Image (cartoon, rainbow, N blue to C red; front, top):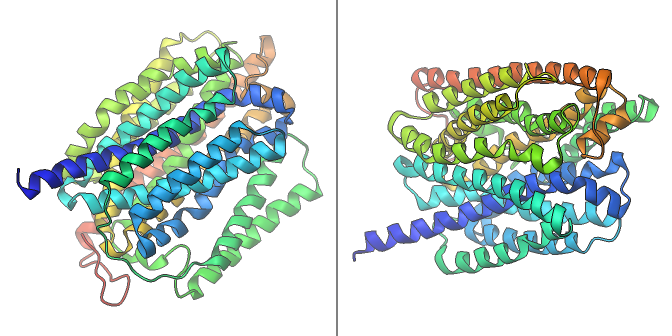
Length: 489
């Protein structure tokens, strides 16, 4: 066979490795949610702290995404991707060995460091492996990895927590990760041009502390009454984020490369990712709270109702990716977001007596919509990015999505705690109790408000997605992001 055929096979194996990375991080997102009640009981973690087992992981990925993407541009995207796998495996093993609340949260932060290296560089690795006209399909297959991982997380998580121990939800990452690392070392090769960059420690510090302050205040507010300390954390977080925006304008190489926003299609694509994450990430937890609280289902039974959406979404991803390659990202991404608005409308009409088939239908519509959006939006960002900064662009995409996801998670807890007592809302969330009678009705009404809020945010994401087509048509040539560097269209 010729070199082209060998290269094609190599790219296929490379894509499989990247899909495995996405799969293992997706598994870790859904599987941990099912294990929260057992972790809470076994390690005697307080309700207000157990939530940081999830939020802390996401916060670290959010903070590090652009910087480890920058490291990929400097030292090799494949090398950083493989290093992320190693750190993720180590963090998983240590989580399985955790002995107290501080240990499990701390080791989850380490796991988040590995997850940041994997997720931030995966998009750049795909962009290096495939030409522009094939990236939509590649990102579509990558979306299959996420859907499959979410399903495995739900099914394996329920089985492991029910029949084994919560510690095995972390041990399971070790053999999968080791196998993926072995294949990665064998098939992945550095292809992108390396560039010298500086790490923006000041930006990382102000951004991370600002997000932490706001998240801490919002999360604690869901569990305790408003007091001076919470107001201080909230105002301090907002102030630090304001300082962050000032610092970034003066940095030679900022954490968030603001010059990339001058490229047509980049700003609306990143904003679409932000608002989609803010609107959609809370949905999984809100629906599980509804099923475990008012409907009294066990965590595994509640989660299994969402499996069809992930499965069907997995089949849709490659189709949407191929459509993106043919017609561009605007149509499939915007249609996908529109479908997610419809799914949220279904969820907003759940009641104490609604047939559970509506939950399944909504999850399928939501899964199809998400699988249309992600490949198209990722392809739009990476096609617009200059090749020399693929790592930074991929990291910025991950950061925008994760900022939305982190605040979406906190928003879900806060809104849920408005209709019933805060402690009871937290107990429902981690699967420790269920609701009956008037409390169940009140809680369901509170969830409706959350779903309508998510609909509004998803509509904003759809507008951002649709307007990138107008920007591209009327924007003329892209603005260079660095001396001698022009944006790829």
